[in-house]
Figure 1 (spheres, rainbow, N blue to C red):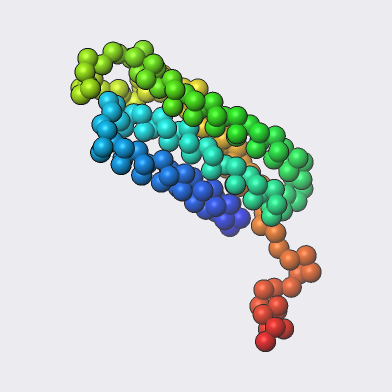
Figure 2: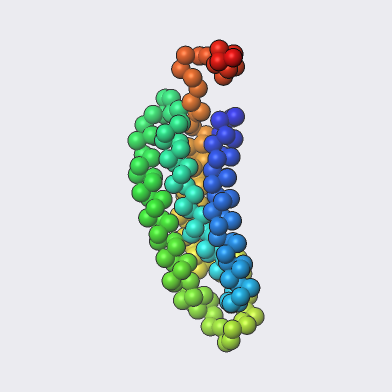
Length: 167
């Protein structure tokens, strides 16, 4: 269980940095050039851009994770990296280029200060593909976090043993 929280914290930190890298510029841009449905569009962008955080996560697992009896899962990391990158590109394309067209399926804004609300169910309907890809990546990442152990020193020595020999 300790290993799960270790890998989960790495995944969480990676996703958190992606979220911060998406939210901060969006709020600055919104302050300078307001856009309609900013919060909904920001959620679409977050769903897309946070996926890039899975790339360093899976690379870290592949290099330093101890797969033990689940060594076969290590063989799928390269495939997962390709899938993450393709999923990221598809979702970023949708959130960057197709987002306004998708909102037009919900309603047509009458002016730049549209008051029409895009609710959670409408949002899910408009961006269900991106949401499914993001949730699939999250589930797979959590499965890997539950299976992969941290590498320990093969000689069985503890960190303190190495420190005491150095002094």
